[in-house]
Image (tube, rainbow over all chains, first blue to last red; front, side):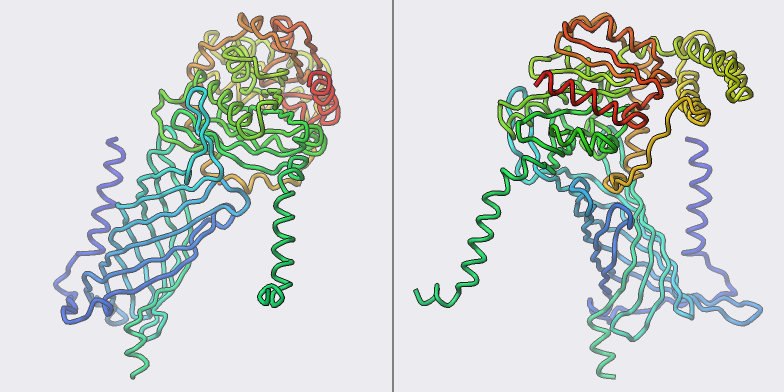
Length: 219
Length: 347
């Protein structure tokens, strides 16, 4: 336990430094988007979700921009400008194993994503989704209680499913599709059997914003 | 009437569809491809049913492990021959394969898992009829679980097939040590892999003479390694390569995670306390004991012990001369011959 804490604390400090560290030599500008509409601040996303070999599915989601910081760092080669965003993130996904009927489920999760975008539009993000639910769907299922056997209606189980995603992406400002991304997602399902079930999945998909498209077309 | 005239193709299509689906159940019984789940005591466990159920004979296979997976046995002659004689039920046990559920560590015991097997039989009877006939086969750990289930209720089963089964796990620690010494001496005398077998003797010398779980795991791992060496020397046949795609039916991480968790819960009690040797006499249904002569994982001493102690009037012991722990893979034709003959004689 102590070892875990020793590893966890520096890691958290590292992320805090990435997210909030200030340097008097590095101007920071907090973008004001209080006048922006909900749709201006919201991007939608659709992505492949799965691990290719066993589970494959789709993930739909929305990202609501909470806070945006522009950081300018002075480097030898000149100024480096990075955009840091804090985003409220919600997902709804479906995954199944097409070669069996034993691993199908839908899930939804909600949390916060931190994303850094450099001036070339390359992005790096970490998303924490502590609020999550996974519902498995099973094929024909019979429940046995003593000598009674009954067919189960809509068989499956519900799990608390928290997840973390780490990924990269590319921003496409002013376009209908505002960016693409690749994430590695780690999900924990519990209570699963006598403990917790870990699962790794990939996400590859696109973000889009209806509002920006309209603006772009008018321009 | 006009509408009917306007849509003759649609009506024809509907008739064909209804005809097809109305016949499908009977046709499928000859070649079942079903996956159903058994929900019992907070666990949902898949049963993959394949093969010919035309006369409602089902062979339920209990996989090894603990923590193995049912479809690992859907290979070779089990698939190509035995499935043609009867329907084979590959069952993912509680905490294994793609079984899911929600229970505490006390919710996964041999006792409950034995009840799961009986629950599976009840489900199959519900689905396919009370006139269904059942045979039970257990391999390795399945040979622990099988007797545990039969000792609860053997009335639904027409026969028990014990394949290198660990009915006496409590005695395995000391038998491992004795068996390693015996096999090492034989192999050195035959000049097979002398350096390796000398290292095995050194390894056994390093094992504590009294049971402890760490050394038990070391012995168990060494047993699998030793079988590979026996295969290299030509003592054991190689397992024929399989083209099946069953591994794609199981998420590898889920599979390994379940195996690890289930073994960590069950193993301590299993290797220290479990023995059905004294109660095998209570199993009176016809029994077939199949064993690899060179089984290092569940040594051959237990084959004779199982055969001698079973209370069945009709029982047979078959030793596979060129096999280790998995004769269904190393001598598949002989394995299928014995199983099919046993089923046909007793159904």
